[in-house]
Length: 177
Length: 167
Image 1 (cartoon, rainbow over the protein chains, first blue to last red):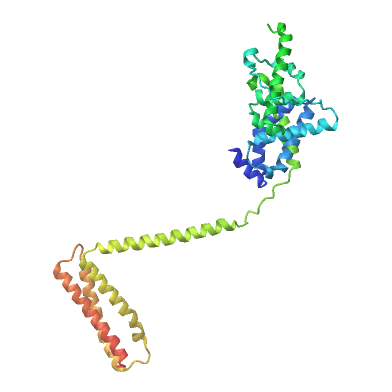
Image 2 (image 1 turned 90 degrees about the vertical axis):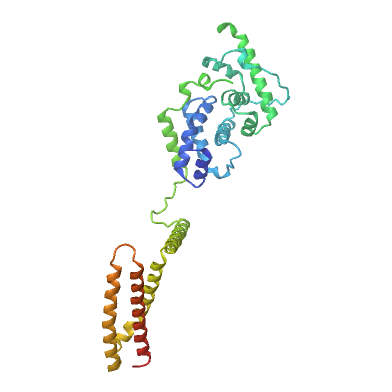
């Protein structure tokens, strides 16, 4: 069933339609939040808060973006609320230099699951942009909408994230050769 | 782009139990859906259905009339003439009960009516005999049938005149 129909039904208060939206998107939201959470309980909590917030505000969803994009935005905000509350948030340096180098990730190395540790080198901000772009295939325009930043900031910080990962990768290259 | 299967491991996805648990908490937190009573009329649907049914009925009546008219037009002339006579006779006969059952009719009128009714019975018998012939009527029989119709109409007309004149 198309998401537009389900959203329209959910706006009327149709719980069954919203449950279908939940089933279609819970994997996406959970796995994304997993990259930032400390434990399963925290991730579950963020996930359910995201869906509750989505239902409460569904009448504000105008359909200008995909429902999943809007949902990720809500999930990100819920996560950031907790980070701000416990003052655990890493100070984010949002780079807006506008410089874009053509960093080809695929030419450098083949991503393997045990390379996740590389992401620990990134702050939350760059890590979010990196995952949304490289893994979840969102465009810079969509990322800008999700994170309330400019497209330019999205591009710049992605480039910076790749540069950092490349540097770290090269430092540890011997382990994977 | 990194493939999702290369980036995410299985334990980074919620298992069935986790999904159910999350959904249960979400469901409890969101307003319950108010169920409409089964017998609650959907007025709009009802009105549209009614209008559609009426429209369909009138369309059927219209189609029936058109088909009937077309089939009548395609009938041979003698059948159409016979039908016209029959309709005229039916109309006259509908006025007869008033005369026949009138309690204040005179003796003369009463006698006249009895005689006329006897005539009518004979004419009806003749009409039925011709009609019972299967297949097309020959020109002679068609003529005979028309004569019988005219005689019957004539008698009925006289009976009505007699009642009007207060016989």
